[in-house]
Amino acid sequence: MTFCVECGREGPTFEGVCADDFCRKHVLVRAPETVDLVRCVHGAELLVGGEWVVASVEDVLLDLIAASAERDPKVTKVRYTYEVRPQDERNLAVTVKALCTVGPWELVGSFHTRIRIQNGACPTCSKRQGRFFVGTVQVRADGRELTEEESLKAKTIVDRSGSGDEFVSELEDVRGGFDVRVSSNPFAKRLAQDLSRALGGTLGSSATLHTQREGKDQYRSTYVVRLPGFREGDVLEWRRGRYRVVGLGDAVRLENEATGERVRVRARELRSARVIPP
Ligand SMILES: [Zn+2]
Ligand SMILES: [Zn+2]
Image (tube, rainbow, N blue to C red; front, side, top):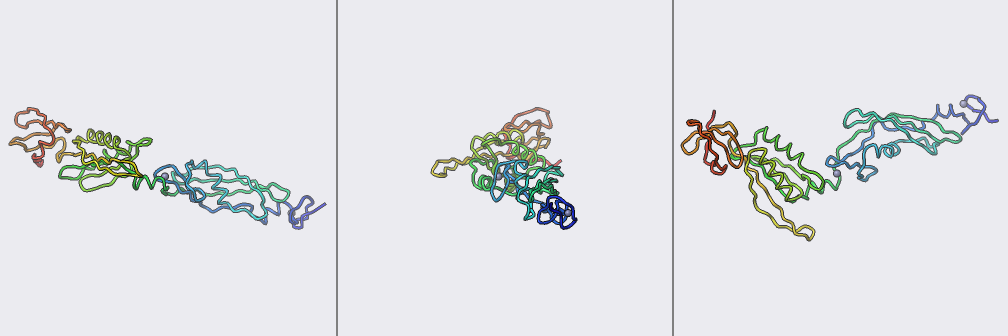
């Protein structure tokens, strides 16, 4: 019969000691306090073992735990089970149990760690973001900057516009408005129509540029959503009269301040109108 050289207890031993004493002298498994996991900000890809994969955090958690845990050299095999508690959008508290094979035993080790989700950009999305756009929508206000309300309204529409193959590559603020680059011309047109309707602007299209991409013909169209210099409720001086703006759009609705008469006027005819400060 063998006995433990540490405590003298009789029974199976490994390297001269019993299971209890082995556990006292060895840390079976350990892991860093935090483990970083990089997630693509544009899509759902995760960086795992140096490669981007389309997967959920749950999908890769076991691999991530196994890759970051350090085991005692005497541990020949480990099986992990874990429990996850999300702390916030970027942090997951993980409690891991490790069933470790050591000599004749299966011993249970455990540790806590925190998975911290970091922002990254995968090459696929970076490529899309950087170069792959076909249509452009320009939103501009005449002779002024967009109001905060207009800007917020427009960007909310842009954010919700893409689905499937249709996506927004880039949104760039410029003087007097912003540019949106998108994946197709029909999508650009539809988005421009939506923006124009929601903001009370007029829709025009500008040059279509013909290019070749990987040997294929490609047309890059630009649609311009033009917002008038005035807003609903403003009073305009126009053709020797004073008019209150009561409706925006391709046809602007005006009310004559003196007579109360209502008229519809094409937006471009009002270019010469002057806003009377309240
Ligand atoms: Zn012992
Ligand atoms: Zn991505």
